[in-house]
Length: 159
Image 1 (tube, rainbow, N blue to C red):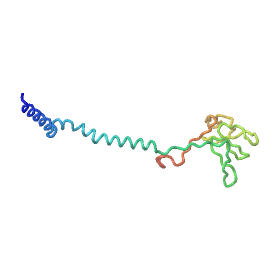
Image 2 (image 1 turned 45 degrees about the horizontal axis):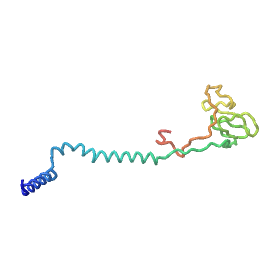
Image 3 (image 1 turned 90 degrees about the vertical axis):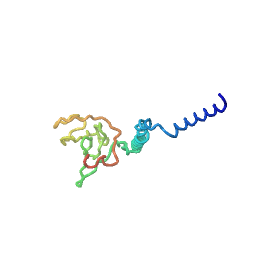
Image 4 (image 1 turned 90 degrees about the horizontal axis):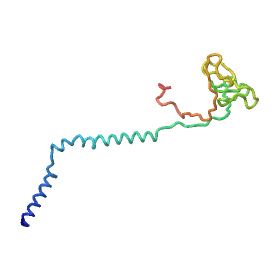
């Protein structure tokens, strides 16, 4: 083989290679179209959706944790009587509301009272079960109360 034949063969191989790049195999590319759609359209959409979901998960509003005070003063009605919440021990003489699980007043050592949340019967805080309706309250100390700083999500329909 002469030098001219080798150069001619090299040139024809180069042109054959370029023809594969310039003139593509259309049936092969059409067969790869679902892969191109998946990579070019569905992939970025899924990535954006995942990033939005993660962004919301990081920046969503969280509930605030507040610590319950040991003793607080009960609010008073227009007649000056203490307004006590149901299910929390209170002292009717001093108008103080205590933590759940407390049974005696810190001021005068009298037994605390508890209003049943179900039937509103008042009993001593040391009695676990309501004699009227049978509701059992577990008197345990709860030092931490999780309270949100706003209305529940979903608006008035959820509340």
